[in-house]
Image (spheres, rainbow, N blue to C red):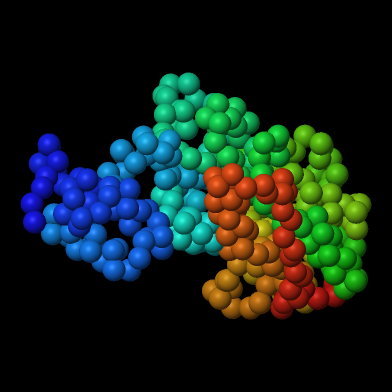
Length: 358
């Protein structure tokens, strides 16, 4: 069996000639195998193996189809930071499950809240078929117009909330309201909130103590704002401290600020489980028993066996929201109609870190 393209590399036409079929039939084997009879398919694959033909050249295929086979994924932090966060990892697991199955490559693009003019924008230059904002509610306003100029489908996980973005969200307000009611039913009245940082990236010192409702309208991240509003609906006199990061260390620093108040809270409601883990560490430092002296709650439901106890938290479907985002990307690229917004349920999980006030 012989035959080579003019550059010395076997082509699909060479394979078709060797197998005695049309070029279109041979092409189908490498694109939609189920549409070719098993006998013909085996003959074509045998010819391809003998000629050393491994399939269509990806660049040539993308030029013909107008597709690159790549989905850009914007993350909220630097890549290293994102993969230290269990929420981001679980979400990416679900998203990758679907995109891998559908044959899409994935290109991670670190998001940022402030524009930088000294280098070209990756999203302007890279060939992507769709973009997923896996940014947990960070708006990154300067990136969105850039994506829109590409004219590709855009799916957001928790955000951005903007026209043309297909959203996957969880019931943040309902989940946090349920947690606040649970803490109130235990008898707590003095409550502090460990708020997620509104400035992801480099870890900072915690912010000042503020009333729960102060300046809510200035918080662009709807996830953060919604969870604060939910607590305010149950505890209008609660206070909050914005953590300087989203990890346990930042949670411990913010918790120390609240626990140093003359009339310290008897319950700390953290906006994620890592901040709650930091609050547990801060309580131990000050000799407070949890839940005997202090109630600590979280939000996310990540697996944290290293805590040594079950955290009272709100479990959200982290992998499922990633999978749903991947399914929406696939449907949009197929030209299918999809709902503009999908809201997934959450579940209150009582644990071992909440109890009545002393």
